[in-house]
Length: 166
Image 1 (tube, rainbow, N blue to C red):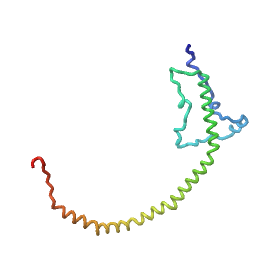
Image 2: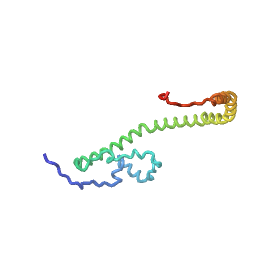
Image 3: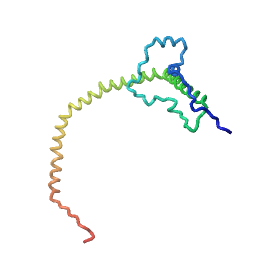
Image 4: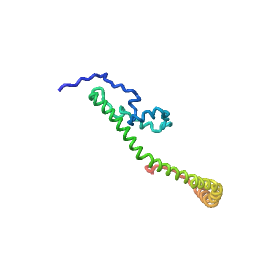
């Protein structure tokens, strides 16, 4: 029952292009060189919370380490599965979700432009006349009731006294 001793400075150096390369046939690599560089598909960085690396998910404390080959293999498997499943899921879901999203936003835009805004503008146009009618109703019915109630109750005096002194 002994502890395995490993070198702490064991590292794997990989070229960035090799590490992040796609799993495509070698023949397509020549076509990739001819392509223009990829433009940023998230220029406003609205999905910054989805930039997950292996170290964000799995981390070993300094006191406990697995074998280097296990660590490297799990890192490679994580990146491979993340890449492959993202490609498969986007292939299956991107077009239907784009269709549904476009349909929903088209319906919302149409309803907002042709129904909501004309209704709001109509209400705003009618508000001055409604305000005149409302104020005349208040002046005619409500104000006299409260004015007379105020005059009747203005002569009422309230005094407080202790009940234990009586």
